[in-house]
Length: 340
Image (cartoon, rainbow, N blue to C red; front, top):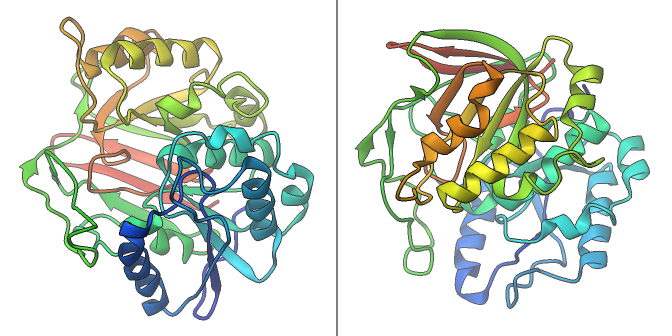
């Protein structure tokens, strides 16, 4: 595994939108997010691919050129999008993969549609990436027990970082950035712990982390951009901890997608599976938890659900490629990551 150098005061962080840009009505939140990163002591540069009038920030070749340029620019130490979107998959064949592999590794951050780029980048190059808060989420203060993507990016190779579930989440809705662009406090109004879906026993397991958003990664699984089994052979002889999360697809769709990912080898080397908490719809005869079990119970590994690694706040950022220890019991819900 190749871990980017840790962020240091004065380092440059680049902002670009590989998927959806930022409409004018949300530019105030963008400014708040940029100012938050600058307050940490970093320089922020904003790329050209930021237009928010459509579902993508620019045409695919332009977005691919900008992302490649930023990932290979030695003066840029991290690249973060404002948020995800819908069709970042159109970049995979257009990125300059040899140039990215040859350059000094740079942190790439994000979640949701950014999984479409983050996970293939780690799988194909062995460069660690951060599945965590997007830029627009960065002003939020992390609740006790959790870290931010900036915390992870500032940790050096060999660092060990533990996160514990805060035991609370937001049951409904999101903050309206149009009305309150400066919001910094998360609303966590509902108690909720992790739950083991396959059986009730405690879990203590290690493995190398890989995963992301089900709705986007299901379309790359089994291709040269989603070869998890090959990644495990090369980088994870100890096995994997695979994490997945549903953004909005209903239970039937998630069930089909997870079956397809399993058939494509996405979970073949898993020692455990983490499933993000979701508000996506159940079906009349199938819940989201049942959909996961239907597709993945045959793996015969621990399946831990309602983890803070999805679209429901709060956010537990994880490093694709980090060696992790998962602990699940009545008294502890924790994930410890080592950048090694």
